[in-house]
Length: 604
Figure 1 (cartoon, rainbow, N blue to C red):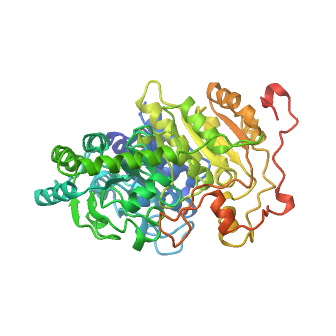
Figure 2: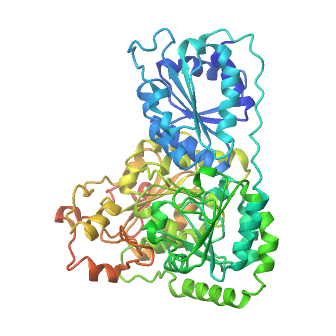
């Protein structure tokens, strides 16, 4: 029993069933212990990714889909440094993860040994805590604390940098691992709850602003009950989508830079903002000084540091969100029928009328594929699907047009905005669902041509484990979001956004042994989506879309959220004449000349 074997048994005792990694020199004893555990019938399943960033994002997707701690493993030096983007994403989006990296032997540390890197120092700003054991005797306390810290309070990543000699050290005297309980969440102070209820009682035009903390605090049911009982209109952040079902009549949609007009106008005009698990992110607020200018603020959050950080809270309620909402619901529901009932009813009706008036349209003219319509239709065909997204225009289209019914259906890189997130996160989500459900919901990765090539090698992981992930690749032959900003705010000086030399992505998928389809016409979308969903095992749908398509509405930089642009306004204010990218970038992808039965091409 050495340190590595003890660690493998301890991970199993923590309830870990799946971990993602890539072996190398300094982590070899751990991988040898994994092999021994497998031979002994151990329950740990290791998923071999094809790049360490893929391991971090897969563990991230596993944690987001399941609510459990995701675990990834890499060797020292470049293996560890390749994890950094995924660790940062977990930190900024509050995802519980434990990261195990190999390190050179303690006797070699500080000598510039082969593949030695100060991972402890390098990751310090992007983890909740770091551990560097110097002997096997440190392992029990460190592992127990690592999982406890990752889960407790506001979740996040924890690093264990594991020297090779500690992995090889004699651990026969160590006790069997016993997980530590999660730290208790404090109750909100009674005086704060009373003050919040009093402010809500005085409001005539209140709005609820819900964020990702609702999911992290297991407060989805309490949040929905609060909205239902108080009948107060609600807006949601990117990470809050699904906290209230998209079809709920009081859900005004996403707010912020690419938010719904009804949501942004409601926030700008409200007299009270009830903030639940949100943090006034700059993509939400626009020009912060002009955000909700007439509103007093009640801010409920588990993390005390977020209350008052960017916007003064007239009442801050720090504590368990579910308990706080449950305590506030009865008095606030009664107040909704009180002296301001008529004013609130008129406000609610106006907000709901705006929701109808500014609802998205899907009757785009022309023969080309309209991405919002495709995504809306796919959400109707696969309502239970878990969707992972990369970053860019397609990410915003998913947020605007997919009908989410629960926030764990929507996995996206929010605060960090990391391209390359979608495919490996889908791998993690698929494995999490397979571990917890006899008939898991489908997992769909929506990506763009720029993002997809960031971690395209993980198609090999999908193929190896025959994961039934469905990939929708929206290909506009450009870095779409950057191109849109260059069009609107940089006088169409298109700099390094040309992706006209993209490969034929369907052919790439086929090369990995994955079923692939291609569509470039609106009249082929329905059949394409049905074939995608009906395909057993993994499949990719390569969708050619118009390069000039933009995401609307848009709040320009240094503007408030009431100053949204749509396509017509953008033409008036920013674009005098149509100006496509240089001619070489206008070519659409075309199917390769392969047999119909292998290609499964749709009408071109």
